Image 1: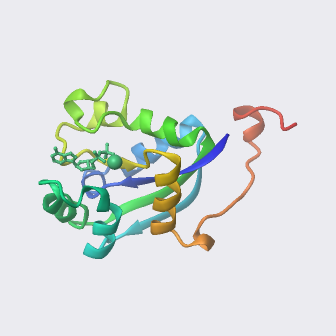
Image 2 (image 1 turned 90 degrees about the vertical axis):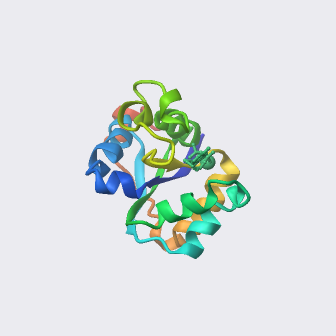
Length: 153
Ligand code: DAT
Ligand code: MG
């Protein structure tokens, strides 16, 4: 089933010049970028995005980190995109992230784990609505899809 999911390429990735490499992994896989922007996140958006973690001890540090510099927000679309992107991102704690995943290849510490991805269909819908206005999400065709997804029926 075609799904859309939210990815945040976090401020550490922007500062480490990894935006292109990280987004490139999703592009190469065949996922379609349907929304993309650079955002200097304010405290309100950060707290709403991470509201589920509000009572955790790491919450203040998490908000400070995500607002510490610009990040890149992307909406990605594809068959089974939500679980696929999570699998490509890897475990939350980089020491536990499998090699071949973004965190397993490029990150070493949980606080600076480079990337956020929606973890379920409901969170994907809510997070996409939080980060993108409807008109910022663009539906378009790609000639390449007949080679990636297969012939349309
Ligand atoms: P994920 O980003 O894999 O969905 P999460 O939703 O559990 O992970 O946590 C959100 C972010 O909060 C995570 O990417 C990094 C930070 N975080 C989570 N657990 C942490 C901890 N124990 N110490 C410090 N930061 C933590
Ligand atoms: Mg999460």
